[in-house]
Image (tube, rainbow, N blue to C red; front, side, top):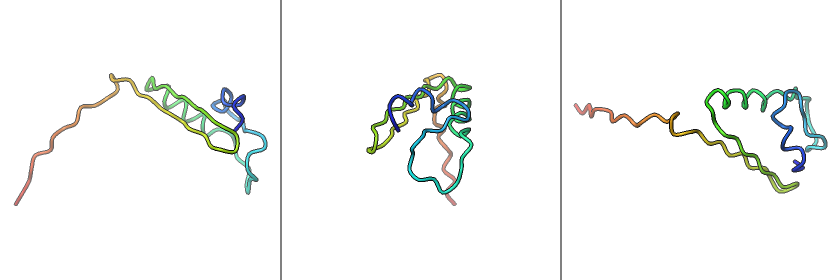
Length: 77
């Protein structure tokens, strides 16, 4: 996707023009829904893209949202 469109891809109903030939239409709501879920968890979303090479999406959760691992008891028989 063109880098100038990165700021808009999380907007409802936005679709990047000229993306690979589509076999069916899309609504443009998927990433907006994802963003709203991550916003509820105060996660940071960073998107970088290079045309015809690929797109990277990085999501970071704060430490406050982390849950410590629980050691399960060993139930050997």
